[in-house]
Image (cartoon, rainbow, N blue to C red):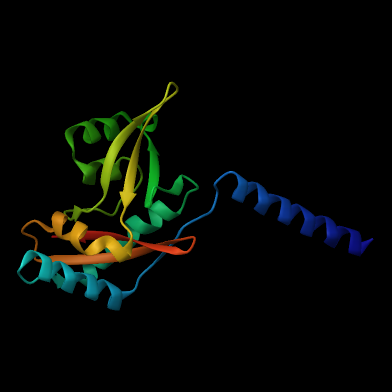
Length: 177
């Protein structure tokens, strides 16, 4: 009898894993890698032609955002980008901030309380369906992030980064100040 219970538990776990994978439920995982973040800051410095230093404080901010993005099955890889869908129907405030282009407050009202005064490198655009409106946030691949991060750097002098592992690919969440 004990063996049957073990077999049933294992079968249920395998079925649950299969269902998650079939529904696109592969989860991303967030991690910090200070050395890789510092290398990205050097690439950004070279691309913008001035120093951009790596900040441990901004690394923590980036990690909070990466953890928020990774903590859902609303993350998927498509067309070489990692995307996190945020349902706009959840908060009128988040919708207003999205319309104003204020990504920091948009994230705050979407239950990501990490952005603060950092400028974020997430590209975002609306995606409409007959049932709801949502926003897709895009995270660049680490291997292609140097120039795209430089485009976001503006006049910032500090940078922090955290990373998202999704399948075989690594993506970056970077913040600037």
